[in-house]
Image 1 (cartoon, rainbow, N blue to C red):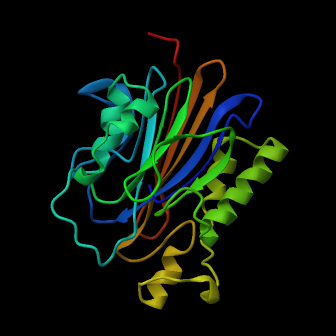
Image 2: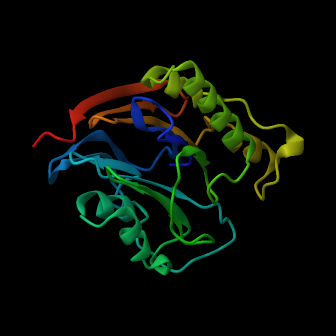
Length: 253
């Protein structure tokens, strides 16, 4: 993913409220959200190039999502796919903190990772901060450390605060929040990219000819164990190309 805003233990019904945009090259092949045939307890999209995923959840409620770092001029050696982080946590049994503390960050290019089970939510990165369990609150994560105040992050996080205050927590309102194509003001852009591309990627929802927002995902985990996961997909023009929604309960076999 490339933009995530989420609330942990901030809603009377939902312990986790999360909405995220996945931005990627349009040519990179991917399978839509679905139950994996080879891991039937895993609900996730799948990167068909490297085999991992950007966001996934298990029937038991284990959840993970990953973002990359903008490191245009850093050329790391061959690394494991960051999608492996999500897959390995979701199919594993370690607590979020234990999983994060056991990672070898040097195996991966720059990442930030959120992992959660029914008890805790952990944030970790291989760039700056040590793994940390997150307190109740509203947060944002993009292609840098947690709550780095990029305009699109602060705008989207503020929007989530407003939805929580109005109790408008549903897939449509959350997806509309991240459908914002307004770029940051030129004065607020500090980026190594050419200015036109830098402005394009400064919007919550990105549209360019070769790269852009491929899907928006919503995860709602209620206090009683009910889970709603929704995914809305987009083509290279930013038009809707498909949508799925799943409901299950973590207490079910």
